[in-house]
Length: 178
Image (cartoon, rainbow, N blue to C red; front, side, top):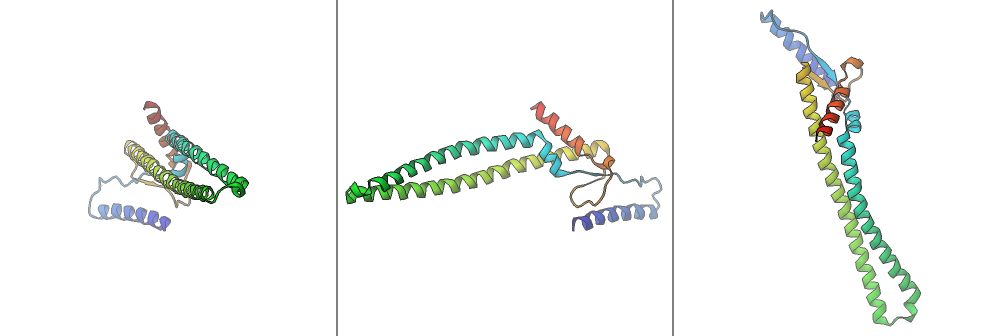
């Protein structure tokens, strides 16, 4: 589908050039500048991606350590229940079982909440990075006079058409300037 779309864009551009020439515009520049980018490589090699990944890991590690502590507390209570159940009164036994159930429910809820928060945070950071990459791509396209930049779905392109390295370098510079 993307190949057809890319091909369709090129055909449309060629048609527009031919139509303009047919209309008598002889001074029209008929050259079309096309470039290619590898969005996955750009994201993976950008310092912004690594920085965002580190932030996410730190946030995740902090919350995971809290959840691990809670799980260890539940495990201790469970061992106590197994060890001392025969010696406990019916009320003590009931309170301990209720405490274990309550803590287990709370832990399960907090795990789900952490996963949802992590997914939201990851999407926020990804959206911010994508926007930054798009801005840099547009800047480079304007500076180099590129009419069309293609990404996924390109079957072949020469290395001289790939502007991914320039985009990565610009992202590195912007990151260093922060």
